[in-house]
Length: 196
Length: 357
Image 1 (cartoon, chains in turn purple, brown):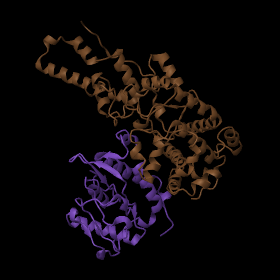
Image 2 (cartoon, chains in turn green, yellow; image 1 turned 30 degrees about the vertical axis):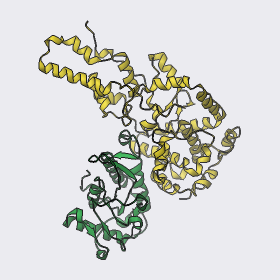
Image 3 (cartoon, one colour; image 1 turned 45 degrees about the vertical axis):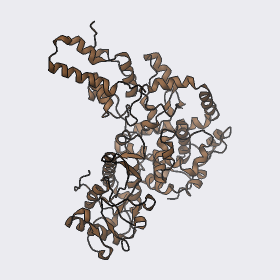
Image 4 (tube, chains in turn yellow, red; image 1 turned 90 degrees about the horizontal axis):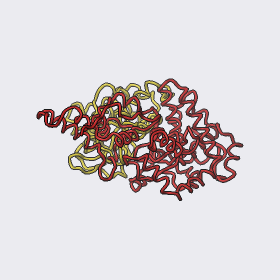
């Protein structure tokens, strides 16, 4: 599983759910795996549960609107239909800030399995560095790119691109995180935005 | 009977040979080295329990999983060309007492986009003939799996595509060669297409050579990686559905593989990223032509001269390409990536004609 360490220092308040099918070692069956992608201190935790054989789920996530919807981390919940899962990123930066900080707090103070973020508690608080300095459209595209543009060490372990072993999914996300961080270090200007 | 085996008996790899090809040759010509070595070093009667155990272990490593099964295939996921940590390669190293670092150095994976093992099928027949002359085997070269090299740089010709279902054969090179002769009609078809497209393909080859020069010139690995990502993204763009008409004269633009049924149901993003990896040499050759147009490396007059004989449906100017691309769904993300991977030598600013960023 991915480590939750300080390497994930960039804050990307969006989640990503590729249609990976993961081989479940315990049941030897296939399951859909949803990867939530948010590179910050929460990321590792989210990914940890997302990449567990039961994925982290955000219910009614087809239209991610933090003000109206509820989000929780529930490894053992049933998986929603694939059609309802889309690329997730709120255009509302305030909501994003709130989500990240509140969720972080929540997940730290409680058992992560029960972490729950009721919409009523969404208040715009919390300090999120760098958030406004990033061009999310570009960043989003790049994360998608990193998730799917598999490096050779991943490719050579994949027979069918639609059925991927859980450890390979971990590696894909791990590599993607490193690539995103590396590119942000190397080419920060490309992700810059004039919005304050 | 005493059998002799020494490491000097191991064959030298042919220049550019893929690891799988070399492994096959070694096994064919120097089979069961551990058995030979054991016979040579100690008689069976003198083995103590520990030595017996060690011998059995070595023999086990030799026989399983390395020795070919009845179907003569390796596991679909094992990439015997580039995945050095794979079970079979490790068993091979152990069986022949090879240095892993030497193996990694000689058969190194270059920092270029690679075609996954499940979709490998390109080959140059002339290179294979040369391989037979030099070694007695139809050598399989690792460069045939480089995504951005659909043309043989040595013979300046488009790679042929073999059967979809050979990829997991241990004797992949030999099978390709045999199939080349068995499927005479298919070869005639590919020859005809090659002949009709020769002018377009020549321009594609020119683009490939120019790209290779750029890659070789760059000393910085990050920059080289950006450049290959830039070109791969352009190739993906040319394979978007809105430009599929550019490939309609070829029978297949993608390798069927064993998961065709599944892959057709994939979503747009996966399709965008995976089509290029499954594409045939012919499709990638055509794609390089389109990339040359977009980069302005092929001018309109050259394109018109090339396409007039057979491919008169092909775009002959970058504007005609972007007209179709700008209304394509996947194009916007590709544009972001092109911007991100821009370098001094290959930049989004170099793209000619109507790119709407």
